[in-house]
Amino acid sequence: MSVLMGQMMERPLLISSIIDYAAAVYGDIPIVSRDAAGLTHRYSYRDASVRIARLAHALTGMGVKPGDRIATVAWNGYRHFELYYAISGIGAVCHTVNPRLFRDQLVHIFNHAEDRLIFVDPSLLPLVEGLAPDLSSVESVIVMSDAADMPESALGNILCYEKLLEGQPESIDWPSLDERAAAALCYTSGTTANPKGALYSHRSTVLHALGSVVGQDGWLRPGQVFMPVVPMFHVCAWGYPYACPLSGTAMVMPGPRLDGASLHDLIEGEGVTLSAGVPTLWYGLMEHLRKTGGTLTKLKALVCGGAAPSLALIQEIESHGVEFLHGWGLTETSPIVTTCLNSTLPENLTPEERQRYKLKQGRPLYGIDVKLAGEGGKTVPHDGESAGEILLRGNTVISGYYRDAEASEASFDEDGWFRTGDIGTLNAAGTLQLTDRAKDLIKSGGEWISSIDLESAVLGHPGVAAAAAIAIPHPKWDERPLLVVVPVEGQDVDKGSILDYLRGAVASFWVPDDIAFVDEMPLTATGKISKRQLRQRFEGYKLPTA
Ligand code: AMP
Image (cartoon, rainbow, N blue to C red; front, side):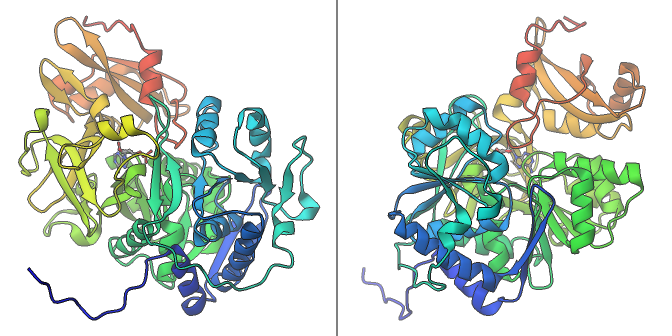
């Protein structure tokens, strides 16, 4: 069948086009960065584009070729932003590395990616120095610093970022790359096996940025000041370093200090109107406000994703007049897949029902198909009740892991849908609600208990600061929940009051068989509660009911 072709130009969707556009259209809009020492740096998208051009020339001068992997080990700051654009712009791959991973994982990641260069923040140089003897492909380490502040280092092949930029041309004609070329690489936090690489293309990155601007209720636009608290080493800070310049949104980069007091100070001082990060960080901010009686006079909305928020957190954030926006996604999905926004809530809900609805992960962005699969791949109805594994297909979803045939093989069904490992329900309106990770489910007497819902419920107890439910083997029920709880500092909470509280809040068979109090939760490298470490710690735990 012959098709009548459209008569439109075709230009590749390239990351370089985003910074060119921002410089031309939103040139005066600022990027503010705070560094490890607490110093503030200010410039504009126009200034950034000039330095990005200079950096791109410097990289080319160092022999960086299309397809080369160039690693960054850095916090959120303007130089990291420049690297995102300069590396990808010349066709190389910006490989962001999470400094919180274990040593073995880091060595594996650098060697597996075969990174040629490492760009590192001065405060993280000791980490790279410690790894250096085991890194097989790295030719040079570049410290993201000016000449005056260059730290001492035992490494021989060390260079200064600002020195590289000196004397380089201030503009560049970006190469017209294939839009499917690799642009950025990020490894999953790999809690069980070795980390696996998600290799984003220019096309997937630009489409994700466009989709996320549309899919966030117009929050990203000129006049808004966005602070990415989600790190730039974790799934490209959820794509915000692309979506912000694309939409003319100003940026405030918080550097390494992400405690409640530092975030509050930046939000108020720099007029941050919107921010995004994992729930742990927002618990920290709320705790700081509670302790100090602080208020949020500028912030209008908070995006929360990466782990399930509790109803108590949503309520506390909104009690400050800040709209709670919920998002879900994975490293493998660029990451944003769904968002739950005020505009998509059903009508006629009471204020409390609206907040409860926001526990749902929401609806998919344009271009991503979502379905549920039951055991043996059986179709699960989208009735808002039946749960199944969430499968995805779309332009911003990986088609395989980087150089990992085995992991790729295991992660797709026979029709090519990506298996997320998350379990959830979908209602008729296409709204997704996660109930668990496949490996975190608790199966009691053949019935599933959602650890996410149980945790969310118990966080409403005033004496509970953090909670995680894990499955403990049980002779009669196969598995029963153990609830691990961090009490609120200075509060005297006992098991009885928590169990009483839960009895009114969840189905009776969900009420945990025991509660274990701990001083703090083990966290993963991306700031989520590490259930794997909890399971190890409570291995062989004897439940009183067993
Ligand atoms: P990562 O690839 O490290 O970003 O982790 C992705 C995983 O984080 C997902 O598969 C989910 O299990 C979890 N996750 C992300 N967002 C949410 C959310 N909004 N609610 C619950 N879990 C989430």
